[in-house]
Image (cartoon, rainbow, N blue to C red; front, side):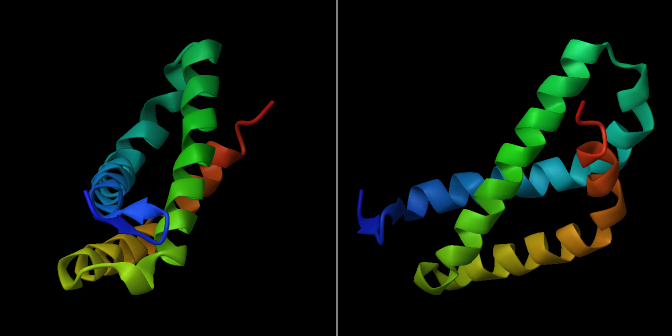
Amino acid sequence: MAKVGGATRERMDLLLTQALGAYEELPEVVREIHDWDDAERMSYVYDWFLLEQRVEELERNSAKMTQEQRRRLEDLRDAVRSHRDDAEVVKSLVV
């Protein structure tokens, strides 16, 4: 497994897949999250903050990505912009 500046290409692929999936399901989560119990809700919010850190990691390593990874990162950037309001709803649930 070739290292790329502290992050592997495989790790970047995994992070891209996870982040794109999370943003894809975010509108449904926001519709339902108020019906979840407190533990489920707080777990999701905590995981969301971790996801945002991983998106930042992807941005930091974007120059080291393959062309396909950069295309997927652009898709992720579009998703982040499209779902900014939903992400703010999730982050507002911190107690």
